[in-house]
Length: 499
Picture (cartoon, one colour):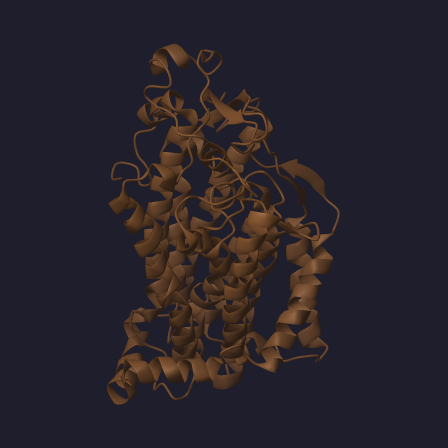
């Protein structure tokens, strides 16, 4: 396929445009009130979030080569090491001290070599069988009927559609897993028992699948939001070459992110708590309540699934290593790490202290759901609803899309909610999500088992701070002066009064 540089820019997310401040007159003239927005006189297609074509050489090298390699090389090694550290009896304890002792005896190279020998370069036969059954069940549930809903319009004018059946999937997948264990088809702790081989299998498949998606985005894309980014092969493998890939009609992002990764995380907590009871002869309060808190958080996720399909993970991140391998491998390994640490080495928490931590985490889960549901309800009602019992404050913003075939530009409207939780901080939902995440790490009792169980919470903190920054860059490029007005109205980014 031969295409001009300008066409490639549009396919990567839009042609280069003037800065948000220059694309419009003052915010007061373009967004005087929630009900009245000025009409843009000079339309301009929104620029891509990442546009390597427009980067100076040094920035292009740092962002399109060095940074991707910083994740592409160590992450597939790290997941094998973490599986080895938490599940293998060869490591004295599932902790940083246990890993340090192993490295002192065998060296770093020995640790990596032994970790891959333990998980399997391509996993194990039993793990592949488990993953086969798991994904067949997910595929069957993928077609459960539900209302059809839409995601945001892309820069090329594509509007993705989804069937809203997340809650039905959540209920059915739980019943299938618990029912199979109850019927004796497998042990309830099977996800822990086969975890090392599962990580080996997912790691090998994930790397190969990202290669497949790279080629597909170039030669058989599902939508016009595709093509090379201009950052070179390393960056395109890492970032992806297609925004909304489908394979045999199945939405890759929805299936990988929701139907596999989040479902595995939800069921893993239950399985690990059961395995702990088998090993120690009693229920561990820390593990049981962590499993319950995460389960409820993921019930909330499936209830809000359409909101997730409208988030930055889906509407900006292409289906490459960062997004797809991350969900296939990083989520099952790192998001369950705190619970796995507590299987071999019990948390040692009593019910009163575990319940206190659980209550804080549960409050974070509930508030996170409230904030997400508030904005989703506002958007679906097109502002014709009440927020906290009052008429909502919002900005009627305008944005532009470009037809990839003709280059014709079209103007559209969007509503930016500036009241309720979304008037307190621009990304307040991240504060609530981090409250829950840190509570799960604390339920593994790092005072007794060391800081390793806090790895997920620390990682998520960095991820969400970075994501908030990326989301605001995207919104400034898309909405320009309208979003500047929103930032003036809602001054704090994540934590009111602090940040």
